[in-house]
Length: 429
Ligand SMILES: *Cc1c(COP(=O)(O)O)cnc(C)c1O
Image 1 (cartoon, rainbow, N blue to C red):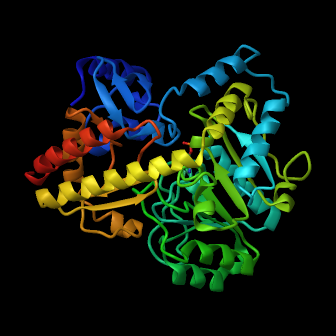
Image 2: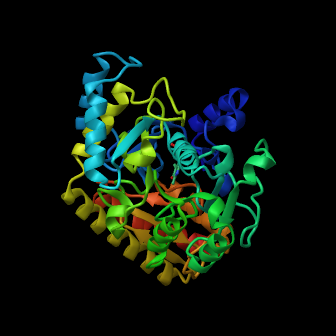
């Protein structure tokens, strides 16, 4: 499955990096393979260590909405780099960045730049706790919010079950302040708030889930989260690290017309650089140091080179881009669905804009319990078939694939043809 150059690099990597990777899903374990080491990427394509070319649907796990190495983003980044890589002091550029983000997200009165989505959600939760004076946070099964201790909790099923850590090294006391509920289940949320509303600082949610595969919110679900929080003095946090400026220019909150108290952003708004942000209500954000008692800081926060890439990317987020993404997404969805039907494979394609997942089950998938019923063996076989045909699809059933503005009709045609043949192979296992 992997080319010989990648094999050799993986061998070397495993001697010096745990598992040979700097982030676990890159290891391809979920599909029983070995990673492709990437030598370069441009537009909708990337190249492996041995020069093999692929159509890329990972898109750096979300950021590459314009395609890789967009010339305007590169030019902005180089111009900024020549003025200095990092100052640890405020710059005009980061003010402009904050103003632009605020234009895109009317729910955000003030925001802070950080360097990763993990930092954005972790900090948003600290602010929510500081503002409300409460400790408990609510998250949903199958939603990923980065790797901070209190967010690495999926917990058992069941209302008000105290959190059990998903990772070794997370203290039980920390996990216990996280309550986990099923996604898309309003009665469960109502019941939890009825029992413990006064303890809850915040509810954090992926407004369209990407981290159990693409799972959209049922109509009214996000509205219920926002209004239940409001009723109980808790804060709603939309983790739009993946959906932000992906499912619409102003994220899921624009697409569905909602106003959360706090928002976490990353991926697309960072333009492929280590840049993320969190922001929201003025009164809430005013509790952050130096204005208030909630501490949060970062040596490289608002890094000028990263901010330049983010600004250049935001400038290219045009209505035409989102129209194109919608069209490409619809074409890919239709192609995958037709291929699965033709090959007689139980499959369900779920998509919101340019986020898409082919679940190997009849579906629909509305929660983690549903998602977990997927045939991951069949997915792995299909994934290997796609890779062999030059299509780089996310190496897990539970990761959304992403389209970018650089994917063209030839890419889509190649992908659908590959998917069809790979489905035939997967059906045979
Ligand atoms: C990727 C992601 C994160 C974490 O962002 P990092 O930059 O990887 O730390 C958090 N939340 C969601 C919804 C994500 O998709």
